[in-house]
Image (tube, rainbow, N blue to C red; front, side, top):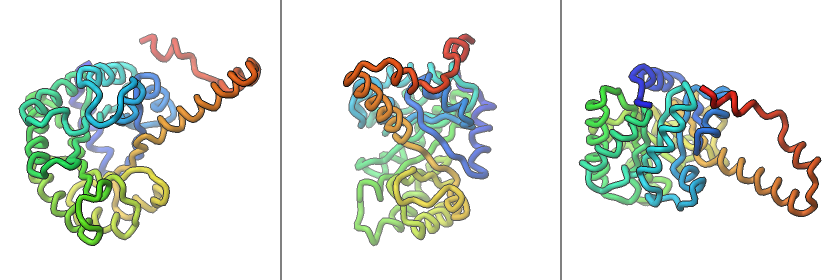
Length: 268
């Protein structure tokens, strides 16, 4: 399921207004999310890793991620973007190959993070990812993530300035958007959205403003991150505990609600 160039254009266009972006972890969660009204589907690296029995943080094998993206792209008809963590390699040439494989699997966007690696390496990885998109003939949406705030890479009073410094550099390297996870302060969000020069993506978390207010601040994308996965696993835990405690089939059946015809969803 190679990436569709028209889907890439559609995904870029969604950032012109305000995109609420849910994060899935497999084909079923992606398709259900699409049926709920999602205009695009993202993966969460943590959710994908956990769903397959791996820890987050570059522990999930890239070949397995490629298979997950391919399955999701086959199951949905909206643009797919995938969390590629740090590109799954420290060598930009290998990052280019990995990103190209994700594009060939159906992704029209990626997240690419800096973490605690050198900022200059992040820039080289962004350049490599852009090259992969050009080679594939896809205008890849590169959502460059900086963990300045999430991982407290600088003193708190320097966080906004450092985020903006990195934003200017990643824009020059070919990024399409800026992802700043961990931020909730509205004044900081508004400043970064105004001055970054790239569409700003923030992450759903307690204390962050509602979507309408974020849009008014200039934010272009709100990601669910691991929110849906955690909600689904909490429901699974509660249903399993209840069933194990009493073996009540009626209660278990009632928890189903009114499920879709899954065979029909995945028949074609």
